[in-house]
Length: 542
Image (cartoon, rainbow, N blue to C red; front, side, top):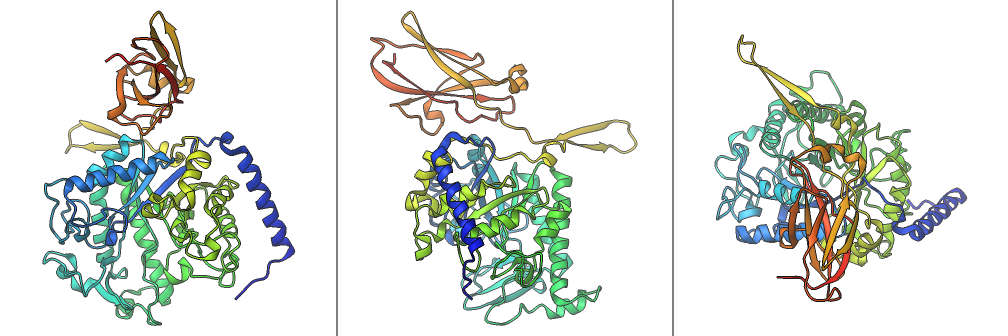
C-alpha cells in the first residue's frame, strides 16, 4: 500500500531538512561526551569475523585487532560480538561445543589453544571499548542438512527439546515452551556472565521464528501440555518469552548487577492498525510475529537498553525512519534507546543510494534526548567505508570522542553480597560495581626550557578521585607527522605519575614533525581517551 504524503508530513520533512542543514553547519561544535557508538560483529557463516574458519589462531587474533583499530579510528566505542550464534560457541564451555565457524569443525578447539572471548575482551578494554556478548538463545543448528552435531551436543542429549523448522534451509530450534529448555539456555548464558568481564549481554530479534512458507512453528503439542492458564497460542508464546527474559534478567542482576542486558528487536513493536499504541507503519512486528513484548520488558525494568533495528530510510512509505525514532523515543520508559542503523542496505536500492542517508539518520537521532546512540550493522559493511560513511563519522559526526552513556540504575547499584560461613560470625563483603574510566587530560601544552621541551597537561577538577589515587598515572604517545593515530604500545614513549614530562631533542628546534597525546590510567588499569594532540617540530634524540 502506498501512502501519499500529507501537507503535515511535507511540513515535518521541511523541518527535518532545516535541522540537518543547521547540524551540518555546526559540525563538531556540538560535542557529545556520552553516546553509544556500537558495531555488530557477526560470526555466523563467517560474515564478519573470523573471515574464514581455517585461519590460524594468530591470524584470527590479528584480524580482530585490525578490525577493532579501524572501528576505533572513526569513533566506535563498543562492539557486540556474536559469541553464541547457535548451539556452538566461541569460548571453552562446559555445556556447548566449539563452533565450526571458528575452527572448521564443531567441537575442535583453536590450535595453538587460546580463549577467543577472553582475548577479545582484553583487546576491547585496552582501547576503552565496551564488549557486549551477543547471543542467539534458541537457534541451535543453522542447517540440519550440513551441520552434524557432535555426540555431546544438547540436541542429541535432549532431542525432545528441539523442533526442526524452516523453508529451504531447515534449522533446529530449541522449543521456548519447555521450562527445562529455557532454564538450560539461562545456565549457558550465566556461564559467560560468571566467567568473563563482559560489559553486556545482548540478543537480537531471534525469539520464536517467523512463519515459514505459510506454516506455523510446530509447537502445538507443547502448547497443549504446558498451557496451564488457558491462553491463546500467541499469548502463551509471549508468556514463555516474557518468563525467559525475566528469569535471565534476575540471574544476571543477582550475579553481576553491573552488566547491561539489552535487546535489538525488529524496528516495529506493533503497527497502529493492529494496536492504537503502535507506530504509524505497516510491517513485520516483534509482538505479533516474534512474540516479543519489548514494551513490557522495558516497563518492568527487565532490560537496560533496547536497540530497535530501524532498517528503513527517511521517508519510507510503509515505515518512515523518523516516524519510528519518534515512536520509540516515547516508549522507552526511562531505559536507554540505541538505534540499529542499516549500513548493510546502503546502495542496495535507489532509496538507499543517498550518501547522506545514514548521517542524516544520526542527526535525527540527536533530535531526541531519549536516543543515546547507534549500533551499526554490520562490521563488514563498516570496514568498507561505504559511500564515505566512515569519513563522515570521523571528520564530523563522531569527531568528538564519546564514552558509552552511564546508566544511573547500574552505576548506583553497588550491591554488597554477604556470605556467612555456617554459624560463624565471619562475614565476607564483595562489592560488585562498574568502575568508570577517567576523563582525558586537558590543556596539553609545550614550553621550551633551555634546549629541551616541557610537555605538560592538567586533569579536570571532576577527576578528584583519580588525582588522589597514588596508583594512577599518565601515558604519553608519540606519532610521526602532524596527526595522531590509534593509541597502542607501539607509540608509547613514557609513563609518568606527574602531569608533565621533559622531551629531549637535539639539533635545532625546527626539524621533523611529531604529534603527542596523553592518556590517564586509573588504579583499576582503565585508560582514558586520548587528550587533544599537540604537534611539535623537533629532532628526537635516540
